[in-house]
Image (cartoon, rainbow, N blue to C red):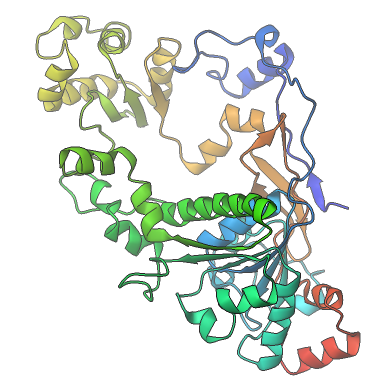
Length: 462
């Protein structure tokens, strides 16, 4: 039975009554935003044509998760969300590195399992990317521990690892070793730089790759040093690529009956993520630079300050700029001024126009301007902090969080899976595990007796 206390409530069908309640939470909730053609009402809201949800598509797929930190755990969590049985194998004494990355952490209940008494509190970082998994501990350095992992390989559909290239092979757990045990195994390697090339043995860290693969160069204000992104975007992107690659490999195995070695790495994932910036260089030899929140080719298209906060404005064409000038700034002359009448002119006179807009917006607070913008067709949005993000009417309506019951921490809230299927998210079946929570369970499935498990525990092999 699921240990989820409260399933995600997806508002797939709007009612007028609920829309009204949302408007009480936020006066702007019922207002038309820039991406809406017209005001949505209960009568024209979309309905579900196929019924709610889908069966877990990866049910029955067993995944051996040898990853730590963020990129690998993100990939395996997404697979676990789809119903795969993910066994996270961790080092016995401390487990995944992120278990010790606190504060912040969840509180530990007095009623927490005695077997977990020696463990530190559950870190918020670890809890973020390890839902729906089982945790067991194995000492790889011991031959008996290595044999346990080999038994897991034999029973697994997928192995996901993020060791430095060649490390597992030196331990007898490389691709060639594992395919001899299980020729249908999909073996996904997530590294910093890939399995070949001069950097293949270098460790991969998100912030280093951000700098080395171009992202940091284009992030930050033009007159300030390069800046990292506020979240480990390269790790997350790599996890998404790995997740997609594993799904593709599972489909390939259906056709060929054979396993696949997937080579996924942070460096190439980040280069792929440069998108149009990379294309600008490859096609036209155009080097990139930092623009803060501004756009190099569109003005106004950036964050502007107001009296008590910030607003993002994206007037991407002349019609939108005319609306901005006339209906928001109360300065219709700007739209016909030769210095600002066209986007080319606005780019040329960027500094002056940004100053004019900023001076006007600084006269009132953020909520005032949000109301002025609402329904005009000019792209805009507030710069929300994290509390405001989770209290956003759309976040509340869509149910972007899920509450689960954790043995050590009690009720905790997690970000819900981001995708819905026929209007319903995949259910969170298991909370993030505490270290070694399922070791006995998995060892029993491998055929070990209670006496053997106790002996292996005593000798710190599991």
